[in-house]
Image (tube, rainbow, N blue to C red; front, side, top):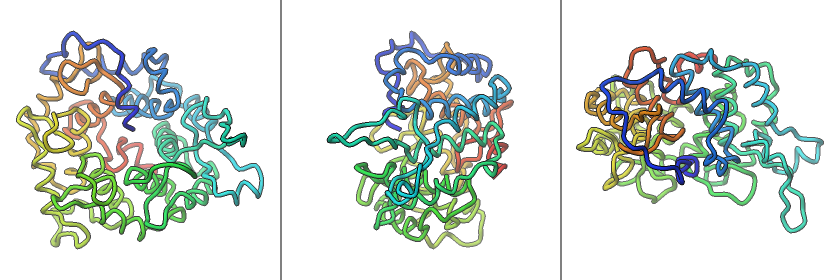
Length: 363
């Protein structure tokens, strides 16, 4: 996701943030409609992540209550065209992952030492594909996704972590989250060993209470979200934990809460790590964790809203920080953050999946 986050590189800086006391919903919808029709040229570098970019656009319009601006059937058909199917029994037993491709160009075979590698499906792309299908109202039960789940087992490592592709890739909490979200959306946990995944997640909680992407790594807002949302999906954390009679025996909740509230900066925004600037996207990554834990009242909502409005662009969308040009990544997480802040006319968010509760309700 980091490469998608940096997709505004090469664009000029926004001459000014859209300094306003209001959330400019109409302007945001116009921006996303434009992105739905044609992405600006700097996004050529993100062609391999086109499905993820589509997720930001489609889910963003849904949050803004403007999903009627897209052809839902056309979107569903395009997403389904990116699903990879095994061709024969040998494919089934090859150890490959049969999920979704990130883009049309990913359908062209790669060649490694003279050997054709036709399958480039990716765990994160599969998460985005299923989320889009749910958002546009496609019934996941209409399709046979058994091969997604059975082949997903090939991606889980002996230590419980997941790789995003079947060979030669990094492994960390992001891909446990994708696997857990996929299993949750399909209502089928046969594609992963939940206990092994849980044990790996718990090894990622740091001495300061946050979670790193891998055991021993520095605590990070995105990694902490992946950890907590995954534990909720798998049933290892109770709903609205702080309102329940007993704290979770699985993680150190007080230490985690201390780390989370310390991420609130003096400018009202959230940072992802200590000694970093506040950033639009962490209003979701940190804010969603607080919501999942039932601790969203710890947020200074007025201060956070003020920071986000300072990041709102006059062109629509949000930049990373005040004055930055808007990009899809930060725009989308700006929309999700305002949904968590219960902005009028926005659909409420299902924080574990990062999509609207209305879309998630079809699980």
